[in-house]
Image 1 (cartoon, one colour):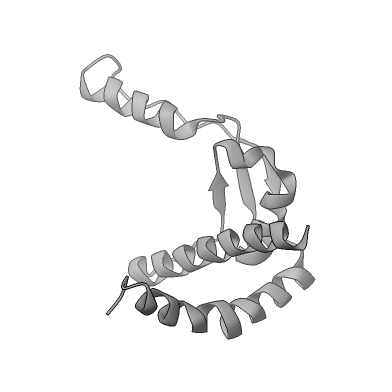
Image 2: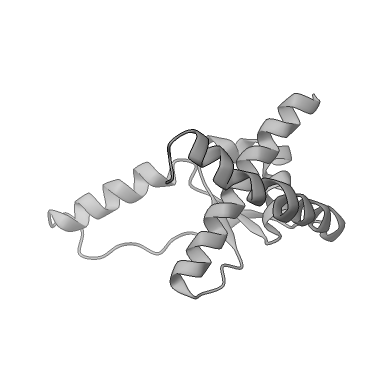
Length: 127
């Protein structure tokens, strides 16, 4: 159970790393995350992600939103539809737990973020 939880936490940490990079690149705070796809069926994983990133996670009503979005853009591009439809509201919202977020943030800042450059260099992913 601990090993499985660690895998889920690791993926959540990478989500947080991506969120932070996107904020730095755009100069805009990302205060909500939208979750779609098969991972939305795991309430425990969504809670870990919310606790790690420290912001609400909106769970899409559309399970396969990537596929539906691609089909809508294709329909728009070939003239089958005149405009993209409105995105439906979230089915549920997973709120972070402040105490767990504080613990995860400390572990991210002092552990994960400091080790990532070394791991990426060792793999040849970064100079």
